[in-house]
Length: 259
Image (cartoon, rainbow, N blue to C red):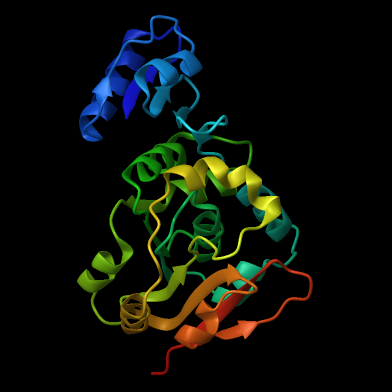
């Protein structure tokens, strides 16, 4: 991967981009006003672009860039503030002060909602296998500002680590998180999710195996929750109790942890 800046960077932006290139074990190249599409073609590599307002990852085989944005979380949070429900929170049954481990962080939409629900006394840990995605999301969570104070505070409370979720679970003590959550790439595609294509093109694909579920059951105090396509075989395979939602493209499965 190549790291560069927007077309008219200042010295601070160049410095930040160079630091990121070092952290990500990537090469920094000055933009020199070149078009990103031209750079992708000539260098035949993904390009991480630092701008004044956001970081974008331009993937060689994808037209649209990947960047952090809290859009869906913002819509959901506004509904919660109005007193409406959220199916994710209903499945997780999170309470103020709870701890939440998101094993498949992605763009952190669910973790943002979880952070809002558990509040300042809670703890949110996000695990993302892709180092590039984890970096973009971590930077976005700490720097993105909206006119919604509750959203800004929720984003800044999320801790992000780039590692394999099974490896991380093995380091956790028994019953160290109230909720352990999985939202893996669906076995079946959903047409409405075309907006996630930039994410899918750089995500780390790993099957959700029995060992990971067993570790999650050991680490969780209250429940393990799986979000998956309604046709997924993983619910039955791993013993999740599924909450069927008519006409929904995905369901939530739950494994309750007994005391």
